[in-house]
Image 1 (cartoon, rainbow, N blue to C red):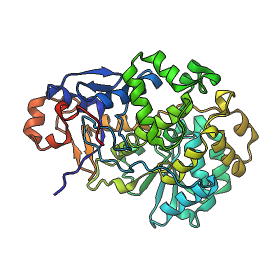
Image 2: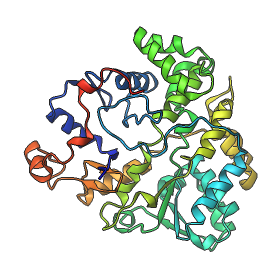
Image 3: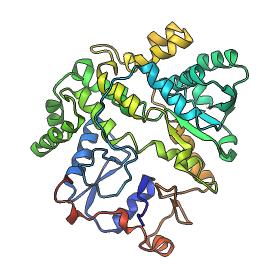
Length: 392
């Protein structure tokens, strides 16, 4: 019988398992570079070039890089064969979820990704009784006007503020849908990076940028090989950033929403939905990288194509023209607080929704882990001797 692979990890504890295995490694941000896994380490070097504190293990969707840990690739990379219209993308996603005939919890942060998601459901759901808008004070801080517009226009739409004690005790037995994937498939372009390289810097050859960050011929050669898997030209810094996040970072964050469910008797990955993590949206962005940000423009033009979609429904010209992306940390904050306050410390989750933990987190010792789990999860790790070359 096949053993379930990793789905996601809690880096605060999972890293100790590597240490106990006596595998030579050192840290780059929150990610370990492990001796013998040269191609995987190159992915972390690329991540470090794009981020001052890399986090979230790369999960290679191309099947060409052997990693130290065995993750299940939920959606292996396939070169797109069609270019859908963005309206059709959203209508298709709404249909996918509403056909499940259950209540849908729409986690709305207030940002463009989750707002466009909510707009799509309001436009295309035939039964609004199936929807519940889940928000917090952070959501209102980011976009109170949109919230008030929705509540006024759809007074019967169910909604819930999860702040205070609510999110600690709510069961969330429905399907939870988030805006995950909205960043990763649009190059995860944060304002700090934009200010660092400048608008013109996004159009520079990626080779020049990577060399400035890491004077390593092997890394350049790896990038050439890895970028070729995209099936389209990857010439600029923006294109390279889009490809890296789409190919290696689109899976790792979404499943962590299961942290909201792990105190229940039947957690299931089927109850977690990442609205933008789909072949339709990926195909759209593959053909429209130039829409990620207006070339030569200000940072506030990042994801303007999403705000334009929202504007067609919402008709707020100020929102369309002047709103810039704000990094939303509210979901990670709620996940971490719930984990700590309810003593839900977990080490990693498997694809079958198994949650692996020990009793005394945040304290974690090798003796306790071995006594609780023995060596039953050894299969999740590869050894450096197996990683002398890439998997074909």
